[in-house]
Length: 74
Image (cartoon, rainbow, N blue to C red; front, side, top):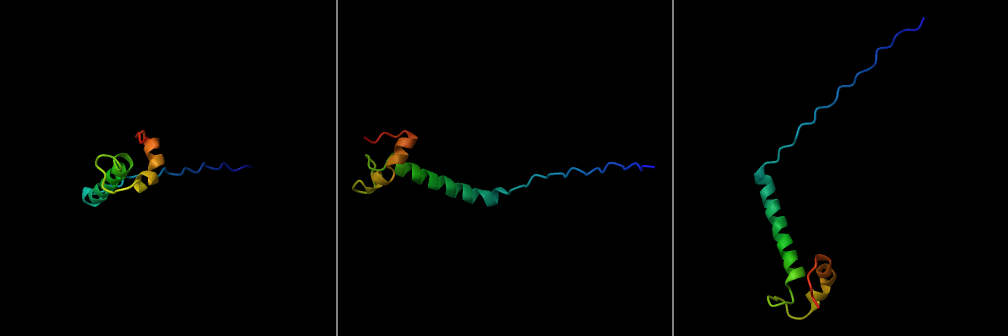
């Protein structure tokens, strides 16, 4: 005689969202925003009217990035 086996039921895990306090995220967000603005300056405006460094070294370092982002340079 065959015994009936009850199907095993596995409970689905409950996923709780992780709360991040603004005090811990805000400094990193400001730092990342500042780095993004500095990178945007060097790619977009350096070697122009608002040039900080003399010469064309910075222009050559970010030349391909200028074209990738749509900034004209020549």
